[in-house]
Image 1: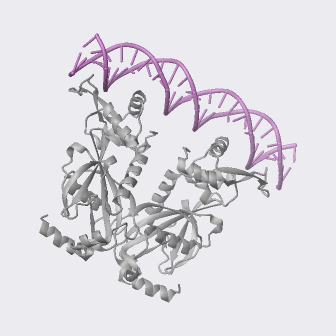
Image 2 (image 1 turned 45 degrees about the horizontal axis):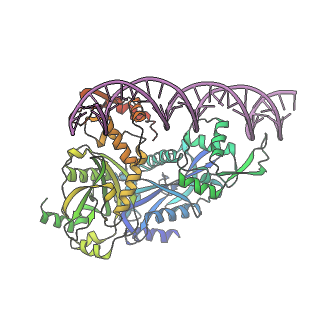
Image 3 (image 1 turned 135 degrees about the vertical axis):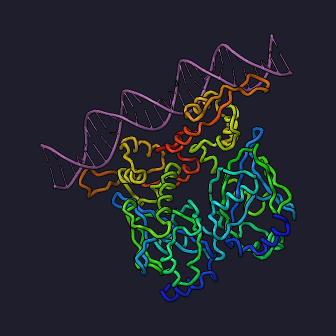
Length: 250
Length: 250
DNA sequence: TCAAAAGTGTTTCGGATACACCCATGA
DNA sequence: TCATGGGTGTATCCGAAACACTTTTGA
């Protein structure tokens, strides 16, 4: 969508979208032992915010979130989970910001309740795309986030908490890592999310014990040390394990 | 609010409330070894539904939920937790129902996204109050629910799942039982929610091990057998334990 | 040849489970 | 006096945590 089209679309937001209701997405990725979040930077004012959007009048919220995700990452089939709805009347919006937004029509300057989703994506496959309001769409380390507009900082921390909670309910690695990965990589992912060190040997035992990983004959070469095995998730066993509940426990 | 007032209020809903957005509450109570849910029965059509309502234009969603809870139960200080937002475009609304509702104005017949909360209340303290649309407000056993309108059946089951999940994160008994209760009562509550039997002795050990219960010298008399001790939650210890996480594990 | 990372197996400990006996009460 | 429910303690087991040695590789 071109800039001009976008402005017109927004100005008449309530014609297409449900008023007062938005979706914000916390998109998690993992790269170089860092948990990352995809952020947008506004053209005007240079404020940072979460990728978000609105809900078409006959669209489900889940579909809206999926659409927003697709637009920002160029990915299909994203793992997506609704985690909380933020409904404080004005969600820390400064008058300055509202004024900025009102350039795009009165619609944007009204109260919004926002439904928060978090997404887990394969960092290496994402092709970040800014939206009409933004000049950049970029990954940021979770522990060096810039100041975010509104209550988006709170939304990120709530999402992170939700992610940590759900870590024991499904194997997050499947979504955040490339298809083939090493055990140390998987461990570092868990350590990063949980923000605590784990024992190498116990971690491997636990993961293999789930019987959802398939060890490949291939090894990861090029590293400076002993070549680790590559693994990949066994889809069938993975699905089956999910249904029974995982019994992890970190 | 009188009936007539209520109708006028609803007819002009969008003047007071955020459009397209509602709150539904799954209010859990516990009585005679049964987990119960508070339901409303419509005057017209006799349909059953969850207590719900709308969000005032400058009211937070949490406040709206609290207000709705207060109106239906006459209780203050209710334990309330947002668990999911339901956003399918029309959420299984039949045309018949929409027609019924449209008597109260066009506003009600439009698409609604609803934010689900569940509440835990002391059954014995609740004074159920029907709302303007309803003739009765009554407790129903969780496993013999009538057919509910829209997707309210799904909302209840999602709430129950969320309650079960959170059982390990905070001591549910505090909210669902009267101030003083016996260990067997507490156990039956857990057994009912989890829908599985628990060992009497291990249950007691686990609960007392949390060190949030205070045993009273008083015993519960009047039963047909040995008089069980009465317990009550120790507020200070309870708060402290909550912050550290509970490490239950059922 | 050495430091650093990866692969593997054993011991240990604590919490959960299983289980048995005594006590109080009303029928 | 006996059936029923309530109070308490102990043995056992399994899974988690702690831990050490060997192998590979590039520097």
